[in-house]
Amino acid sequence: MPIGAHVDADDPLGTAQERGADVVQFFLSDPQTWKAPTPHPQAAQLQAAGISVFIHSPYVLNVASTNNRIRIPSRKAVIAQAKAAAETHALGLIVHGGHVRQGEDPAVGVDNWRKLFSRQAAEGGFAVPILIENTAGGDGAMARGLDALGRLWDSIGEFDPGFCLDTCHAFASGEELASLVERTKAITGRIDLVHLNSSRDAFGSGRDRHANLADGTIEVEQLVAVCAQAGAPVVVETPGAGQAADISHLRRELGV
Image 1 (cartoon, rainbow, N blue to C red):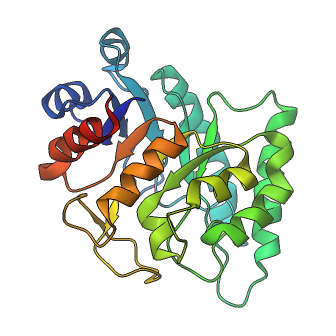
Image 2: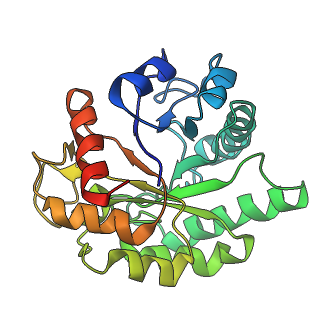
């Protein structure tokens, strides 16, 4: 079970070694812009060091959007990000589920996801697996809570998409962690990556504010249990100063 962290793209290899991570996640372009991604210059070094890599897509992407000026660039960006991720030897590209605007039908957003997978399947698929991530808030969100996730997978499941489970997002959306892995796998059939984050806010808050494992509102035992049950690589997206302690604690508790 590789355990690691989301790190800055400046020196992922050095940061991984400093924090004792054997898997890293980072961005290949500014997460707040539409700037085109480029393969990471440390790709070969990371691979030689045996450090697994996942790439997170920019936050501006919203495949579900009903706005052509957002949805169409988002589709193109997912394809481009996946290509650059493959050239960085990444195991997958994490993409948030996205949302439609207030008053719009979420079914349209679900269909927009289906169109992306359907069209790309006709072109031979993506360069790396696309891992859709659950989100914390928003009534029009495609992946907030397991009910919404079920509707999305009913539409795109035939394309065998990957899934990234974020514990802070699930907690904030009102999903109990005790049976979360079992209930998630019943929908998606898989968990490819765990974003193991505690929360700064209360259960069901809808707020996406991560905390280090020992400092948040989620019981650490519950977080460890999610890792054990998921059996997937684990990335902490917690404040950087506490990441080494988070990784060390998980290894100790899981015996890995």
